[in-house]
Structures are given as C-alpha cells and as structure tokens.
Length: 131
Image (cartoon, rainbow, N blue to C red):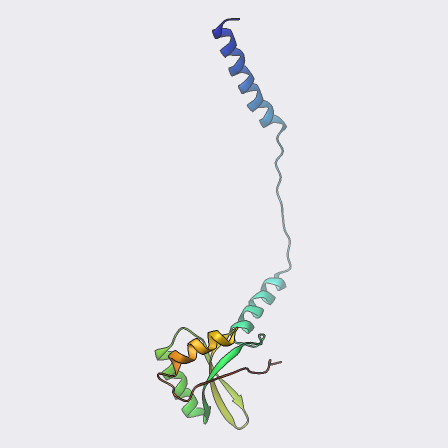
C-alpha cells in the first residue's frame, strides 16, 4: 500500500468518525419548573438577614433616647459610614440607633474602632433574635 492510499484511508476514517458521532449523538434539554413563591421567599430571607432579624450576630448601638435625636444620629452616621447598614429600633419608650450586622465579635470590634471616632458612646451588643 502506498502513502497516497494510506492517507486517503485515514482521511475517510476521520470523516466517518465525525459523521457517525454526529448522527448517533444525543441532545438533551432540561426544563425546571419552580414555584414563583420560592423566589419571593429567598428575597424575603435575604432582606431579613440584612436587617439582622435572622442572625445571632452583633450590632453596634450608637444612641438610645428620643426619636428626633435618633433620626439626627442616623443621618449623621449614614453621611459618614456607608459600609454598614443602620436602622432605628423602637423599645418602649425610647428609640435606638443600631449600625451593622456582624457575624462575629471580632468584626464588630473592628467596626467599633472606626465608628467610635465620631460616636464615642457607641458600644457592641448582641441583640436577641427578633420574631
């Protein structure tokens, strides 16, 4: 067998293997049907975690007292520290300004060092899980 015949056989074999692979190949598609409520629940869970309503983490309390002063403190905080979320919490008869949602005590302590530069009376607390 000469070289030319040998190369024709190899080319024919390669072409046949591509053709056979193409003709015997399988294609598949996958459809996943999910309830739209699952997406809503995941979004709700994410929002609750951001607000520290599901975690057993730590937060920093900046103020405890009247609503007007609490709003003032919250505005001042948000103007200086956008890194951590902040909110006003009501506990009869006073309002608290809480900042951050920290998973560990060490994270909260690092943030407290920065925050105490502007809010000297700030302190770390571990709030009870809200229901």
